[in-house]
Amino acid sequence: MIAGQLGFLSEPASEPLENYHDQTGRAVHVEETQTYLDDELIIQSGMVAGDVPKQTERVLLDGHEIDTETRTVSRRVASKFVADVSGEGWVLAERTHSSDLEHEPDWPFNEFSKVTGPEISPVRLKPWEFVRTQRDEGRTFTVEMSTNESNLDDVSIEWGHGALKATAVNADVGVALTTFWNDVHIRLVIYASGYLAIWEPAEMKPELLGRFINEEIVPIATFDPAAEPEEKQGVEQSTLGDSGVDA
Image 1 (cartoon, rainbow, N blue to C red):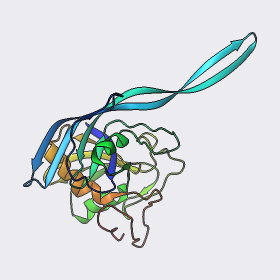
Image 2: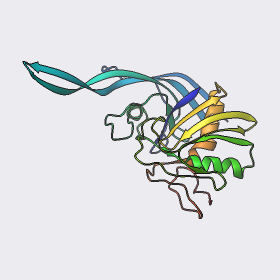
Image 3: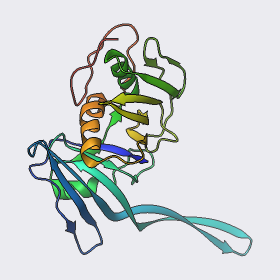
Image 4: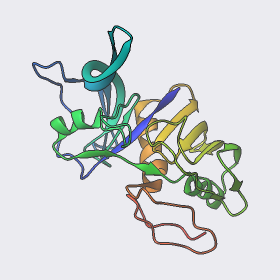
């Protein structure tokens, strides 16, 4: 399965990723770089490592009195990644961490920013627009699951409240479906939190995965945390690709 949190560069990097490490243990290791379409598409994959904060609780006993002390310590973590930083400007990270549980994950995107230069931030996705695209393109697709209530005739999914933006388990809006894209049978789940997972095919060549993300995922990505499905009329969207499609 291919899965992870999607992050976008504020602008494409001037060069592809290179290996990086420092004395603190932070590192980016590019295991594979593949070039397609006459150097227009450069897909890279590898591992990234770094330190993230973790809160620990210490219990203090003084006779019958019990007290607790919370401390923040660092722990080293690692994650696989797939990226196109010099083209469309995205990174798909298998694992993410947040320095503040109330905010979006900032690791490992902050590690990549040290290498690429431009800031990298997690993005939100619009699953309802992905479903709409399958319908509008006349593709054979089947919706297997949608979180919260949905109206698939109008291709709208109601917004969930109080959602954590870090993981798919607690994400607010999502849809799982099977579809045919470029004659490839794809089974996947997309969450508005920016998390996506592809179950079938179990493995995708970097070129195929890169093309799929560039063609199908980039147009439904947004930095707008308040993006919601349109009901009856088209609403201009703050997307990273083209403007929104009228419902």
